[in-house]
Length: 389
Ligand code: NAD
Image (cartoon, rainbow, N blue to C red; front, side):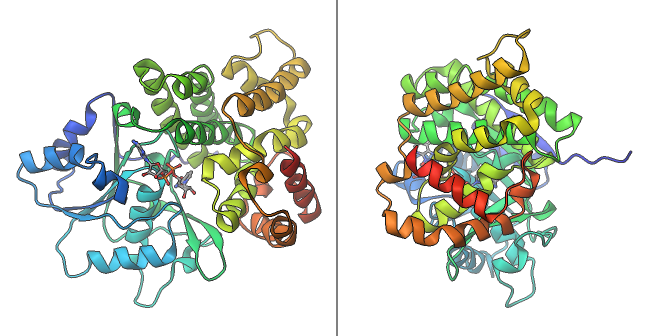
């Protein structure tokens, strides 16, 4: 059997590793980066943690900081314009998933013929070409985007959050420094942490799972399960932050080589239509979608429960699966995850958009990877169930 596994060429991990940014560039033969980041990273001074070691090494750089949460095709076009006429030899995506995905999409669009649009690259197209290599430095734990062959971009004409996949979106290198996450507020800590947990769980139960991705998914869950509540309540806990950061990257490797599934397929339309942060919309769906899918892959969900630490090593699948469902609901309560209604979404708008959201979820391909494969009716029923919480 022929298998393939993708990952960045170089992963530098650990507290203080951001200080090695210049030597990472040097190892890769790169010296003229455009740093792609968000306005908060600049206004808070956080970007200096990257720029200072670059300056100290005599590296000249540019900064593009006009990225937005849930990056849009229009911002990507602006970013590509900022690359043009300059002699950059790489992009550094510095921030949460949004700046990292922006850098990845910029390099894909910049490699395309004039007039190309981001929507030309949405799945099932393959985005394999990149104009410049991308180095990712995550500041949330997290999307795992630093280790994946994906970028997620919103089409502003159709309000669709498009999944874009291919080697063009795979970073050349990543620097994963958990100390950058100490400043992440509790709400974002919870949302991004549940995102990582969802990546690992969906990678494990996906129809595209394989022995290699399983190892990364289970290891990620062993790190995330016991530490997610701790980082929410105790943001300065270094050991827990380190475990979550490592877990997020390993979960990224897991789903990049397996896939995500129904939770992500249904989550992207909630983000696109109602501007709910990505991890939060995952969390709103996770208990209902897991209950729907449980019996189609019970042994795998039971293994996840054992890895997360809510079921004993010798516990039977039925009991472990039930404990996983209890844990996902308990986690949402403890991390104060609102229902879509409590988040303030207008019920008429929610119900009116369900057919479009179900169609967009199906078109992304992610639901087809789920252990139980739903049709549009089943997806709409799950959205209604998530509405009630
Ligand atoms: P984000 O990048 O949008 O950041 C959320 C907020 O947190 C922003 O206001 C940001 O300024 C702030 N923030 C980031 N780091 C901080 C820090 N260290 N301290 C204080 N504040 C900080 O959020 P995200 O959840 O990291 O990324 C979400 C995006 O990633 C979505 O667009 C989602 O679709 C995408 N995503 C991509 C992949 C992939 O494989 N490419 C996987 C999952 C999600």
